[in-house]
Amino acid sequence: TMRGRVVRLGVAATALALAVQACASGTASGRSADDETATTATSGSTTSSKLFAIHAPLLATAFPKAKVGAVNLTLNNVYWPNLETAPNVFDFSQLDTLVNQAHRHGAQPLLVLGQTPAFHSTDPTSTLVGATLPQMAAWKTYVQHVVDRYGTRLDYEIWPEANITSNWAGSQHQLAALVSAAAKIIHKAARRATVVAPAMVLRLSYERRWMSKFFAQKVGGKRIGNLVDAVGIDAYPVKSGTPEDSLALITKARHILAAQKVSAPLWNVEINYGVVGGNNPISHHSAATKQASYVVRTYVLNAAARIQRVYWFDWGRLDVADIQMTGADGVTPTAAGRAFSQVKKWLTGQKVKGCQKNRRSHLYTCTLTRSGHTSWIYWVPKGRTSVPAPAGARHLQSMTGDVSRIHHGKRLTVTSAPIWVYH
Image (tube, rainbow, N blue to C red; front, side, top):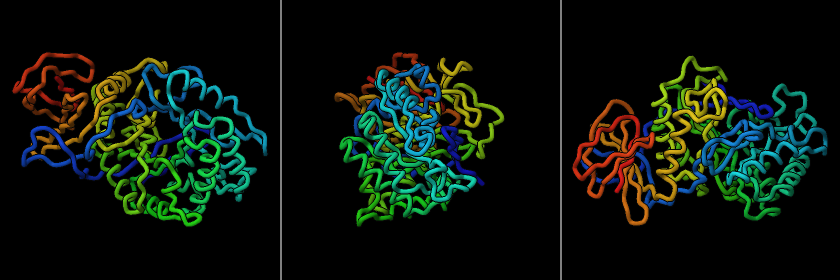
């Protein structure tokens, strides 16, 4: 079983997701009868630096030691009750600091709108009052205050993980009404601001059904998916799940959205691995190389799947998740943190054309193009195999940044640590 993440004034536990088999369409070099498709990227789109996003709990005092394109403020104590401390009394000092810090470092911040202050709840005595339906007038006032102050300096996600009962106690239609009201206010005040639909976890069948029913809602005759600019998902796999399992959840989400005629791009607003659930700490963390490889594989596969943002949870040392991006000081990058920067160098400005998985060797081959040049990223989820260097390949770079010379046809050893092969 899984208990969903309860968000209380910036304290976020993580949610799990279901591991399923990835299946879509892709392109890569050297296809054979043993190849099966792993991701889809029909023509490829240029990877933006904003793909490389992060949760940064220490953002107010220290920006991550990495070039980050966007930051998620979930862990920074800026939910609705932190901002509106009493009826119509707003304190934006903390949020001001965070927004200014992010923009000084070229990162776009994402604010999650919600949860409900007790004094604005339709059920103020609830033990989980933050998950209750707010008074609509108060909701509109809150959203208006925020967007009037920040405009396009923020992206706006409406509610966290609403398909978890401890995060949202209302119905799909009630949530849709909140989304519709907020989207109208935000787009009127800041036409170019980005509104993100409530993030959904994907592990259990009832959660996926909830997501489907939500996007089936209409408000004022308009489908809810037509009122938002992006759709948020939290694609955590099960405790033993891999980046490839997380990709399978993204495929599930795409099927749901396609069935409900939602065309907005997907944002992966939380991701990490090894989560036990129930906000319980894990017993031990994986070896540094495995942690680093998961970071690289996650970003490559998400880029191939046309995900626009991937917010790693988080730039710190979580006791509830496996991948640790910093040392004990919460600042110095670990091998995983350095891998974040390395894969950003590999992908930014590239068109990720797609990935293939070989049925026999389980080799993943992801094909990239930039300025007329093709390059490849290879790995296997476990064990090792080899692959001949493609025509035009002259260099191999490890995920730690080490470079070696190669030539066409040279047998390259491939492990779970991805390598980048280029001209």
